[in-house]
Image: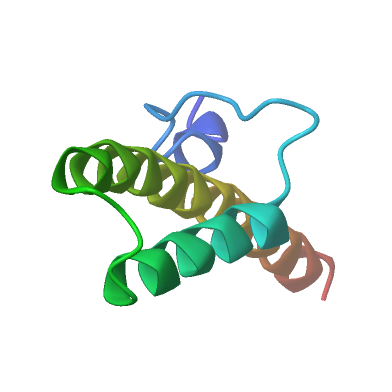
Length: 82
């Protein structure tokens, strides 16, 4: 049972949809930041869009954590084979 202890760290994150793309999420957040900086949004819309951006950034963090876990597992596998 100790084998699963490393592979399930930080597993409290929800899975991402199959159609989700890291690069698209980052581009959307960057676009929003540009619109805010340019003053293109009403104040209420800024808050709404900011909330969406925070959610997208959380998804990006989840994605990166999942990939880091995969890399760690691969490295562990390589070290065990040596």
